[in-house]
Length: 254
Image (cartoon, rainbow, N blue to C red):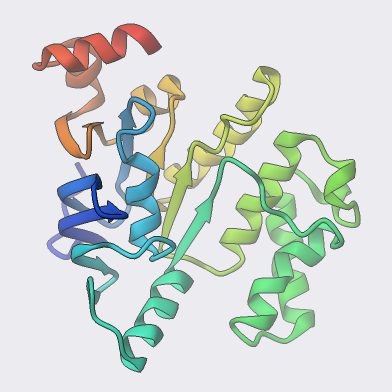
């Protein structure tokens, strides 16, 4: 783990209950340091995606505390200051979903500049220059003026990553970003994630891409029914897991 006394993300005793009885997260604690890559694995329904969505308040935690880049928000409060804090956290956390969520009526470039111009108030010319840099970085310079319907799934997801990076986030959250892709397109998205990691981006990824987890992650955490079952380095988790349930889960995906 890359040591840092001030974690970029700190989650303390977070619970999430849907309705009256569906207790999805059960007291989750997590610290992620600046520049660290954390991969979360677990069976479907274990709470992985819900945890990511709680970090940037797409889901409201039922209890606990979320901290991102020294902005601390407690669950259950409601006032104007808190609303502004949530907006600040969302500016600091880029997120890529299973679905690409691009605006279908906008070109690749227009999708990328939408956030910086409308949320950050950037001048359009400045936003376009940076968007063109990002399109080059994800290998899609020639798709600048294409609409999503004319892009492959892998290309759409790379545009979605560029759109997130246009906001200059401190943390990138990936929620199974390759699960909707045809197998031959997975590699081009994973390559972009690997390059982000090498450049020092703080990453929390829910993914079943074992190559990424094994070769790129600093830590791998196994979630089971809303709690951490086990955590460790990729070497420990994949080669010598302590828990029988971890071994059973890995047997299904390896």
